[in-house]
Length: 309
Ligand code: CP
Ligand code: NVA
Image 1 (tube, rainbow, N blue to C red):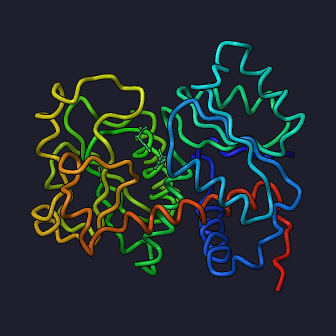
Image 2 (cartoon, helix red, strand yellow):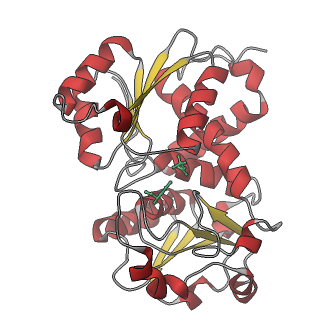
């Protein structure tokens, strides 16, 4: 039966650890995986702009011997021409998988239901699973044991936060989510994350107090205004000002590293100098987008692949 990746909420700790191990193997032995997607074609359907996700999927698929067709629904005006389910069924006539970046999670569910091929979430309003796997791959390259890692996400409670929570506690991390009041993460995701923490051993704390980040090894932030949110920056800037990640916060919390999924806004959610400092893992994260996604593709499309020597 085909397997989709719409979120990681139903992936066990073992499955996540195996996926990270596969990502590392592919990263360290690219030549052995050059034919892993031989002859396979993947459609990338994007309702929103992208730099990292689009390019890392395209180049990553190419490195595995596959082929990507990019469909930009903004310039191509595909949305509204036909029902999503008809688009999904048609795409599956030619493609071996669909990677989709959409506004509403429901669109992914409709695609997954109608397409007979795996659907991979490349970001929606609720989740960004491909980002989370790259983030924890990056963290694992600095810490041997996730259970020693306290990760504080500071900023707007959003899609990136949700995926960080769901994956992080299953891997055994202590995840602290700090947002201003009224910008908290989704209640259902909190409940789900707490259940996963109980099952797998991590820990979740949710707070509006920046002091909850004290003692973290890693700080993480994302844009204060996600794609599609037309709120003027001036309306929220004062609310978020105290939640900027900067050198002073790194020192106060004792954190060693800072992460950001990017695109970043210098001197808003992260200080420009911190972004360029030795503590910044942003480019490592960006590179790991490709390795994480390649592992997802191999896992979903050709899990029996035997790496070539
Ligand atoms: N982090 C991320 O998904 O970047 P893009 O929006 O550029 O793809
Ligand atoms: N939360 C951001 C992530 C961008 C990669 C957004 O949805 O725009």
